[in-house]
Image (spheres, rainbow, N blue to C red):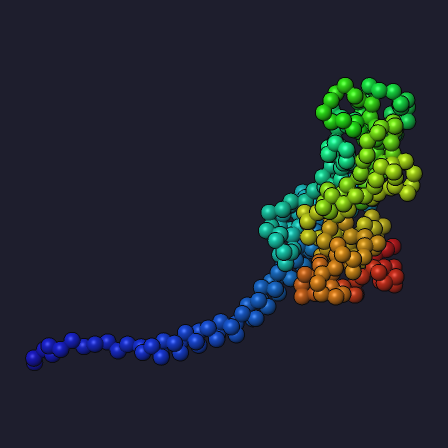
Length: 334
């Protein structure tokens, strides 16, 4: 046989055929995107439910491990730290649907000094709620024993009083000099046991400076002005609400009362780690751009809720919103 001297040319796709194949692949991709998105959403919803289930187990272990069996020992404002040895940090506390969560966050109570400070408007300085050269901490008993009005007051070192949850910060307005230590402002701090504190401010000497209590987390919003710093009830300010994005879930502030009561809300998808019935879900801090859907309804407008029986159920916001008195009584309170 004589070999064929002509080279065989392999068949090739035409440009039209290639374009048709690309179009088919693109069409299949477009058709699959909703399915893939739905699968991811379902996986995130399941992961979130598993997180809440583990938190529920942590609550049970914490309660069972306390030899005194005092249900009040689980503090809604500190629960991520108290349960950390049972549930760990980071991932379990973060819903995968939480925008920008990253999964690297850890939970802790927000220090008072990170939330508010007293701004001296005439000098531009902020007075911080932390012990230092120009701020002293006193127990309630120590504060009441001080004679105010004279310059260069020597304040004692903090010694916890009869009630360590009530204490004072006294602040000096001039933060550039140690020669003028007469301490113009006093802030009474009451720890509420739910991750919040109540501040009541007053002037203790007749300083000629202007002061404002500012919210450091809300564009330095003014909470109390100098004219209100008189120690009366009308200047009380509650600060420290929630966890500042450090956890994706909120514990019912009434947990200590409902822990053994069936079918009550323990923990849920939430914006802060303290969930209160007094919160307005339609308010600016909790509402989303979808009417009737709060920002923490992350699962297609629904909320994962951990109940006192250990079950996790997906609920619509209107099914668990405490703004409805019947729901508040039935699901939130004892």
